[in-house]
Length: 278
Image (cartoon, rainbow, N blue to C red):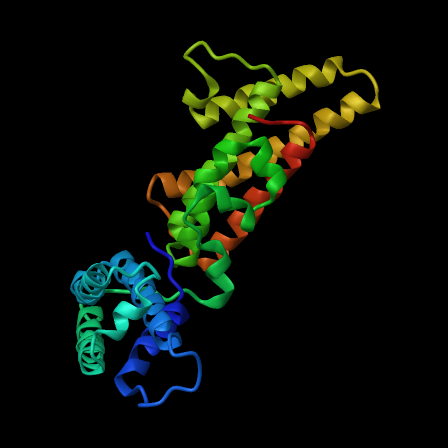
């Protein structure tokens, strides 16, 4: 997936199109237009390649190749400023005109998504940027949730709301695993992350009840009360979201996806603040 700002592309295209109608006289340093062209060419080339606009990228590479040939023949080493001067204005104007036509035609063959301004913060590519919209305290305690945090946010931003809920459920599942480990649960059939959620919940609730009977002092009782509430919350999310979505019995809209995502963040932060971690 790729994230681009339309304004950046339009700015580059505007700088290039300026050459189509470049005035005979230019008020400023004589090398300024050439520097601007080189910058615009390289910037637009990068964006065309990122967007898969191979034909348009080929047009830009062609003019850059011509400039580099001039650089080689002139023996220049100042980033091609003087070399560009040796490419005629007519050639440059024709190139820009042809490139603009090619770009418009090629863009028509691509499908681009628009993301509303209020959802843009949720669309990130790198897992390292998950903390731009999810509490850093939870991410530090549970680094394994970064993948699902990023995908839950990205799905929400692109209106894949049911998929967003699915990833939020996976975030909460890691909270359940952490709770089971905190209670020192062991399972005969393997690690906690290989167990059915129903099995884990039964074991968690049973252990909490056992510890309550042995609890001494308000601090221990308060801690067990927290674990009990978290377990109940997680089980409610399981019944309301995780089970229906896993068995294709439900689909969710944007408001439900947002609620689920916020709930996952709240629960994971609470667990982190109580010392639970992966």
